[in-house]
Length: 399
Image 1 (cartoon, one colour):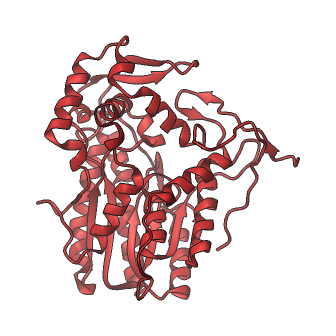
Image 2 (cartoon, helix red, strand yellow):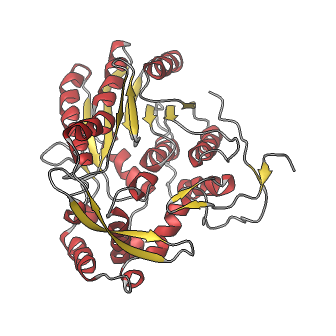
């Protein structure tokens, strides 16, 4: 057994685990791939896609769906941690597994471990795209980062998860060391103007716009080019901390950026969208007060009707490649109808009102939520023997 081969255990505190399990991450990607239907025939020309944020969440699901269903070539970007004293990050292992899918399918798809906000990353990525493909058909922007350094101003912005205007009290779902679900009331102070502006600086549309500008300046936007940035609206139950809070202000900026980009892309017959996806269990979500409890209740209402990230990403690709995408009055692709339907929201609201620490496991699918959170790190994934030592020091895929 090598020094980097060991039994990996889910140690950590709260929702944060310190190590990721390689075999569990590989199996997660394998299960995601199994959800994607194989096309009846290969595309006449393989579309070229740039996926920014390809190592986790909807960015990962969109990459897998694009490779398997739509035959994409291109580049995926993620910022992940290599193995050292701890294992590599989960996104590192998921990228290794996704690269194996791309190679098996014969796709010319490269993965870069880099800061998407940096100008050097943009330059090097565009050099690669120009050399291999000569142009890009699609750009999917799926970045969830806690901070961003603007390379031109030298300013580092730090995002916050706070309401605007007044404090907000909500209930949050937590788990004890024994895995038991707990409901705790939390009060979050309102953001200052500077904190709200900084959150927009991280999660708004400025970096997305810079990517499009860089592609245009290099002449890499193919005719009919389309780009989408992923966003979320969510329930009225979470609006004070989400859509009506600092994150919502950033998402509003993202949507205004989409409108401005669409005007600029008219020269190549292109268009920019935001895609309002439904709820998803991510590492970023677990840090937002009230959201874990809400998503657990949503799953309690929907059960297996809760769509997977892959199912929603397939819908996203369908809209992105459709001649006439189905958009709302604000020009947004809407994939959240299943979540925001009146009967579903009424059922979730009823459970939200009546939930107590004693009834939380009956009204909310807390076991599912905890398993989903652990699966983000490669644990609790069906079909994995966690008693077997695994190699943790794996190389990043070669470009």
